[in-house]
Length: 572
Image 1 (cartoon, rainbow, N blue to C red):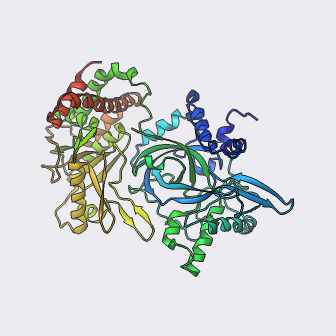
Image 2 (image 1 turned 45 degrees about the vertical axis):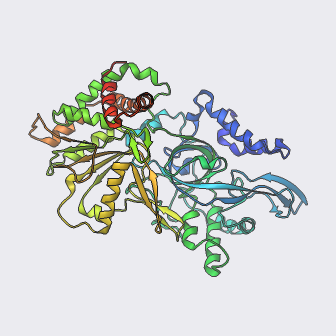
Image 3 (image 1 turned 180 degrees about the horizontal axis):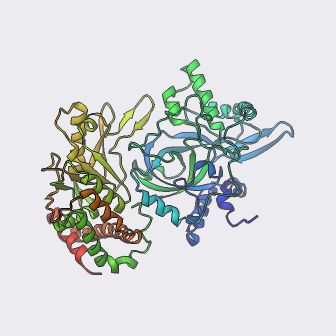
């Protein structure tokens, strides 16, 4: 059997080996992190690591190294676990010191909680979801760049857990229950490689009684799909923020025993509410079945400045083509905007705008565009959004109908009963394109929810911030979201610039015309546009930082506008 990728297939073996060599030295934990960092840097080894975004969960080997491209949706309270523990083997009367880090359940023998070797450690838990609104081309490009396919040596061989296995699991939780009782209110503690691997696909039959098909995965956008993960963070968790985009490399844990622990804790809290500090609702949210919300024990996380997988690591290789690609993109957008080249220029400036700095409360670099003159009766705005969706890594179209304004939850709010942050439409990752379709707004009365939603959209546009609702107070979260507003007349929302669409083309069938324009763009050409927009956005930040440092007192928005035009029209 090849051993070159043992650190991917059996990372816990590496961890246990370094722990055994440490002789109780505390440096072994740093060595583990450095080991995997170095491995991932060698010859693009990160492309060999399977991705939770691309490979179905039931085709991933439990306790193997996986990666997850995600956004931090919520941060739970810190929890305690057994970093080091000692077990007793009653048959041989032998003791063994084991490592509990990067694991969810203890292994082998009975845990001796009175041992002097026991070390209680602390870790943080992040609830992470796929990046909201990620475009289909983005996911497809990431899959194509991967050098690994689902393992052929590990294939699910069953779809439902047998009754015999359920009986066997009923005998296991005692040692884990002991661990849970020994710690303060946290999730499962201890941690180990499970003796029996989870091989079933997520199904309603295998879910515990408290997790039905209605389990809310708390995705910010309606209709989103993909895995959600509980990411266990062991080092430097203060360096991460809510809504950060991350690529997490960690050890996958889908031990079915986690569901048994959750069931027992829920039952005990129902019988005796004073036994635990968590409510039943909190237990359901913080301890979902691993088959639906797997655990990922972080070894290394890379913050993502962007989520465009097409962008090369060396930007200088593409600078020479910027001017020519820009001209081609301008022509394409001019056709989409029915011959209005000025509107196409403004649209490009909008697509590369970026909040590069903040002066007091003023976000510098944002460029919200109001494209007015859009027809209400035709599907024009829908086709325009599809074009933008083809160009940017992540986007969302919000139809500003009266029903949506009065009923959609846009601002995240804190649920103190379940102790979680309930997501909203405006909980988006940095550089997401938000397409506000105001042509869908009809006559009617906005209720209190609608007024709050309109206010939230206005604050997002003007100040690039969203005030999350914590019931007793509001907490301000800065963001960097590109907002494009399409409307018939001037928008009721603020904007940095309004451009009235002035078509020079009048196709007899608008829908057929726009479809033909989109189909005419081959994938290779679209990829050039996608790379160009991301590179131009990054260069805008770099140039603006230099300019602002050397020209004090400048009118920032005007300079940014002129700079962007000059940058895009220049030849490199």
